[in-house]
Image (cartoon, rainbow, N blue to C red; front, side, top):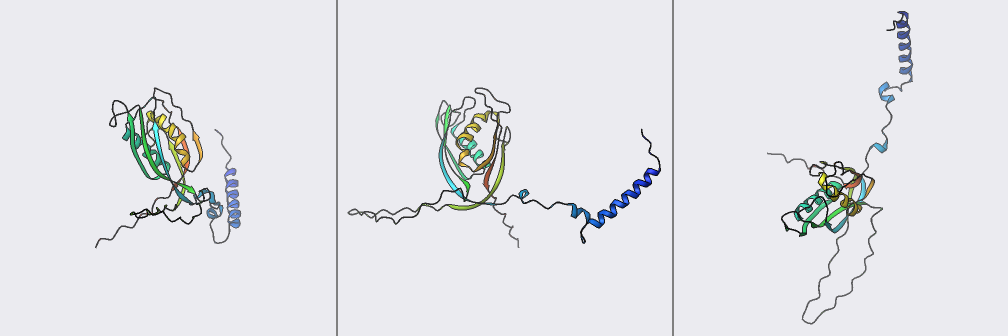
Length: 236
């Protein structure tokens, strides 16, 4: 234990008063010292909205894993969960093509799902629309009316932001170790449909056994901003 002389306290007090006076003089007029010491907010700390185009995707996903088997509807539900969590919207998943003792009701060795979903792509990265050409007059047949020309839907604009996605066992809650091979195939076949960055994959799936910690995938995805909440109607 070190005992300091009493005159050190007086010197410390004088020095503290001097420093306080110097800092008060250095602070800008009309502001406090704490406000002057705060650095300005960097623009990088605020997530800026990104203008984009919603792109439509249709794909058939066929799964034949070694560790886990899914029913047709079970596979569709799991894929819908992952697509929505990754930032897709208007997701439709319909199971089909199950082969096994359980048929379409129980787990099957091979199962598939038909997927339809939309992902947001930046305007600069979106493919330019093909120039419209005047449609040729349809040929008319005797006794029949000319078929109507279908109109292709225009791409829909949207606004999004970068979303951090982390997948592991119980994150999302419905995901577990048995889904390792499914997540691995999702990252290989469906993740390229998204606009992503900083993809960090440490997937480690072992066939025919549950891999603790095997589900380990992190990435940033361009996802649509949530719709603003509408004010509740006043009750009369």
